[in-house]
Length: 345
Ligand SMILES: [Zn+2]
Image (cartoon, rainbow, N blue to C red):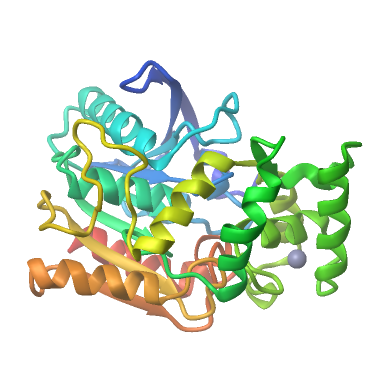
């Protein structure tokens, strides 16, 4: 625990999503009056709410508390802190985000809230917003990807050619396959992945590169994160369900995120019509992102700007990758001030 954190108290809230799935919220209470209203933090795929609190001294949670925000961290259904289940982004957009937001507003008495969302927390939240499911949200700070996936050629090979083979008999790719299960496919995968990633001796870093992107490594630039955070991240990743990869594959083919099947409240293509949302988007993208290329956020900015000119912003972060936008040792200097400025605008 750092000195900064010693004055912080957590409240865990248990709630159910719209379809009855259990989800949780962690409210982080600091010693500064949280007069600016609630901010929801939404984690990425195979991660959890706690992933926003790396051992770096100045994390995003510290920065928000010091700036007077009421911080709520969501564990949506894909969180590694909840029982595993095969989810799709549709489920999260339809059921998790609306329920979490209504809960926060009810508890705080606020009329609107803001959000900072990463990776598939961001895609599912963006989907919910443009579908008109979360009118309560007025600012969305999104990292890496929102409505348009743009991925590297090798990621595309894994998604379209390798996934159909892996999903026979495996409902998930489990980043902790590093731990040595005895079944053939996990063992083979683990060993091939280790050989493919001589750049790092940390098996979690290797498996995360395999499961989530393509790069050496894919999730961050080693130069951007300190040794303690790199080690801590070993336990911060879990399962990625094949049901999500299937949706990502269909979305990659369509050039934008698509729903899995027609359901009341969700369009087939999320960037085909004008957004049914007044939310202002601030889109962040690292120039060295090897999970989703910066063109992902550029395409979403072009789409949003076409419908609501001048309202939304795009921040391209020079020298940053994917998760180091939040976990980086210098993120409190390079990234968080820009996010806070967008929240305060
Ligand atoms: Zn590494």
